Image (tube, rainbow, N blue to C red):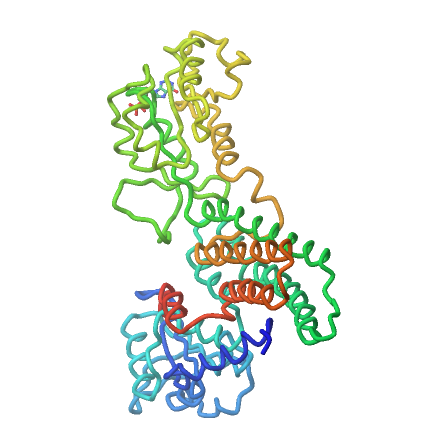
Length: 475
Ligand code: GDP
């Protein structure tokens, strides 16, 4: 029998997975707002019995007859006693976040009330949700694909404008539609090959080899562009590590304070980062910067490359994405600066910054053409700090944030895209070697498979559990 490519490999995959989920039919409950005291808290129920369970504890029993997307004020009653006055919103399947019957209860935000309601709803038949289980159900019900579900987690964790924007783009299906277009093109490709296989006895060619080559080339380029975007994606998602190095008294602490004053970032939890070292977070022009091990950097006392104090800071330089090499411009000659630049030639990630320009005796430094890429500041007066911020932004993201298009931020996607590229390269080689249609079909199958692993059309329960376990409870 000849190989078959395309859609059949996806057949029933999700269905099987859904059937395998032992607890698929139960109703889950969790606090959707952060735990602790607040004006209000939101508790969410999802599952076939969500509305029925809610009706059982609600003062207005008629909930089960109410339409989707309606809001109801009433009391939660436990053993004839009023537990709280609440507002209940009901969403009927499939028009809800999870695609199931959903109830959202806005109650008063005391932890005691939240806990009592959660206990009561569990006593009435709901089960406490696992982390990410609401979104997992949304995925399994076809409300989101896997890239969109992952974007939900990214959106919740986003702490800068760039991270929010990228996550929202992916949540709206930006990345998914790129992948869908690629998938459709590959399936069209595979259909032609399949036709040839069906008519192999008659020796007819349906697939025009040249156009197939062009198609593979187009898909390779698209995949490469997506892979390249990860560099930027990583910056957006995890921030940029910056080290300020320089000899003692160059003004490192003063510069750090000048930068922090304007840009101190409110950071809760950034995925993949450790808090073991001393770190200061800056949000400059929508991008997160981590000033790493600033205590250490501030107390750098030794210098190996003459007067710059860079040699002993090598570890910090290696760890950093960008290095601000700060020197005291009031005690430095143009010749010295040129010498350092020469020594560090090719160190792309270094930004040379001359400080204390307010007391610099050599006022020609700023007008010296050979030093035009050096930023001269007076950290104490916050003079020209904006130029430094612009230079950081340029080095970190260039004009990448202004461009339209998908930015890949997830290393799982990168792994699949790399494998996809290998499969596309194999198709290219096969076409060049004039291999038979059934061999080409195997490589096309591989390419389709890797595309499917990104969007979740091809996946397994363990992988899903792993992905969703990184979500918070209630999401
Ligand atoms: P660090 O050892 O590199 O961290 O240097 P500090 O930030 O502690 O600064 C050393 C000294 O230089 C302090 O007395 C600062 O007030 C002074 N300083 C820092 N920046 C400037 C500046 O832009 N102009 C002047 N005149 N003094 C500065």
